[in-house]
Image (cartoon, rainbow, N blue to C red; front, top):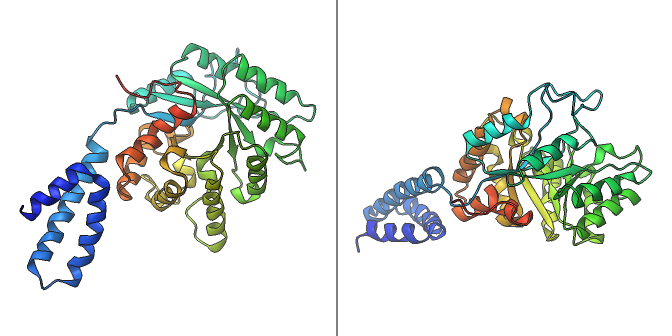
Length: 352
């Protein structure tokens, strides 16, 4: 066959094989510049690769539902009378459910995991009302209350068994001063989460390095509890050895089969503006270590609206996927299949 036809056959049948061929051809082109046949091969392959990559991630709609693994909602000013905010935590931007649903519809997002916001702290009544109103649209992640009296464990069990929450967030900065997430209360909630088949999300806003030993200890002692690392565990693209070490600690957590990574709140972890392409190398390494079926996208609504917009949060992942030539099957896991599987197929995985 003519060379162009052979390349077309490979591209049509295997995207990954095409990528491997690209690296081979790219390598021989410059070294054999005197051979017109090899130069012609290089030009044809480069053009085909760019076209197919663009089609794969920009023009071809996924048959799987898009699920946002990390967002928040809180009461509107009109709803605040029934759902009061925690004193000092009144929000400064809109984040009510109606606004969220509008954003999701515009962006083509089918479902989401709602993480209890600090604005209502341990009062879950607003999020619970949203979950009950839209049971096929949302699942809930409650906020762990690490109170010394142990009342948080009882509240957690009620939220899971009565209200159907499917995850719980460990915010290390809510633990009593001098206490760690591995204390008696933390271990009790973490262990019970595993027994109830509920995931535990960790927020490491001040850096993974401060909490890595606690996470490793809990994973080791309770291997049946699924773990979610919010926002790439707040690891930015490393610019020095210390940051490189912390990111390697994140990758090393892949040795625990229960650990999953949220590729979420990209505006928080990127050092660049939309579409946050400096996160390309990080996503490539995370997928390589954890597998795409342990990685999931999240927007961090409503905070993302003022950054790149809700729709932009979704589009950024596609731009980054293009940058690293991520296989379409991996992108589908990240954009929804992982979350659908993790939360017991709350959402029908395939679009109608």
